Every structure is written in structure tokens, then in C-alpha cells.
Image 1 (cartoon, rainbow, N blue to C red):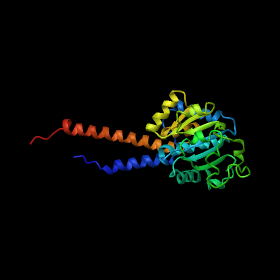
Image 2: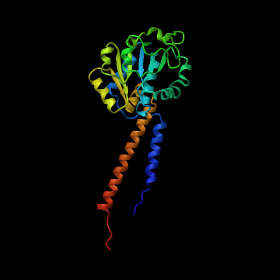
Image 3: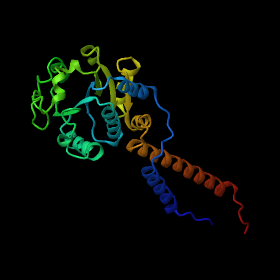
Image 4: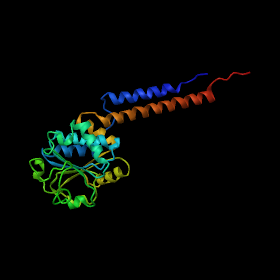
Length: 269
């Protein structure tokens, strides 16, 4: 009787995951038109354009690496990025995001802080986008680190920005009414998968948004477009390899079960 050690299956799965997380390979995925359109929009903005990122993410790997890839793109293009969180528990996650993956220092110690990036901290007031349309200081007076938004020595990039109506692109979970509030602004969805992804995909199909980066796969697609496989690509490749190995194990197990039950010669006593 053939005995099969389950530990072999587990070992191969572990090796595949480790390989995907360490080796910078591009996962076998095509680029969605919505991801390509998102990338082209950021790429096509003039250098120094204002980009607002509402990072309404929950810290999950489904979206974290997508935001990292998009922000890296904005940095490379020297756009002026304004961030704010929509949930209190996002703030420490966002600081970890910048410190560990992008800046290598506290955000306010970054040499380009105030010139190419300003973090406003938590803004969860109902109708914040409407209230800040004409005057960004209507409900927030300082950045997260206590610098006045009108202190142009500390935050020189804010000098050219009056209200949200002046930004060139808004990135995040796009609300339908924003298309009426900001008709001349590029609206770009960057959200996790699930109901919010479906909601924002409908916006893209309807022409409300110019593009979308949806979840882990969207992040991997964006990294491929950037020519730099990173977190999302590694995780997607790991999931792909593990899924493929699982299918192989199921097929082999099923084949052995059929053989053992119906085809294996049996001894006659």
C-alpha cells in the first residue's frame, strides 16, 4: 500500500510561497484597461500637479500596496500630494506605510515634506469635500504635525492651493456626487475589492472616473506598469502558485482515489 506524507504537500506549498515573496518576478496577469487608464492619467498630468489622496483603506494587504504603488508614481512625477485619513485607526497604519515603504523617515522629516507632500491627518466630517471645495482651511487649519496650512515657509506647496476645486486629481473611494462638485477634476478609484470595488467599477464603466486600481491584483498591475514588482506582485504570485499547487494536489488525490477504488487489481483469497 502506497503511503503519502502530507508534510510533503505542506513543504512544497511553503517553498512556493517563499519563492514568490523573495524572487522579484512578474505575476502572470494582464493589465486591466481601468488600471492602464489610471496610470495614463497620473502619467499625463503636468509635473507639479496637485493630487488629493483620501486613503480610506483599512490597512489590509488588499489595498496597502496599491496605494504605495500609486504614491511612488506621484513622487516620480513630482506631483504635489495631499493625504488625509477617513478613519482614526488609519493614522498609525499610514505612518508605518510611509516610514517603512517609502520615506525611510518620519513623514515630517522627509526633505520634500511641505514641498511635494502634506499630510492632514484625520478628516471625518460629513460633507468634508463640499465644505473644503472653495477653502481647504474651512474645517482643518493645520497639518497632522501642527503646521498652519497658511505657513508657506513650512508648507510652500499649499501656497498654490485654495480649495479642493484646484486639485488636478482625486484618488480614493470616489463618491457619485463628486462628479458634479468637481467636474474639471480627474477622479480615480483606488479601493479594496468587494462591494466598494464593485461600486467604483460601476463609476468607471459609467465614465464618472478616469480609471481604477482595485485591490491586490490592481496593485500588482500598477507595479508592472511602473516596471517595479513589489509587495502586491509578490503576494499575487504567491497566491497564484499556491492555487496552482492546490489544484495539482486535488487532481492527483482524486486520480489516486479513483485508481484505488475502481482500477487497482485486488487479490483473490
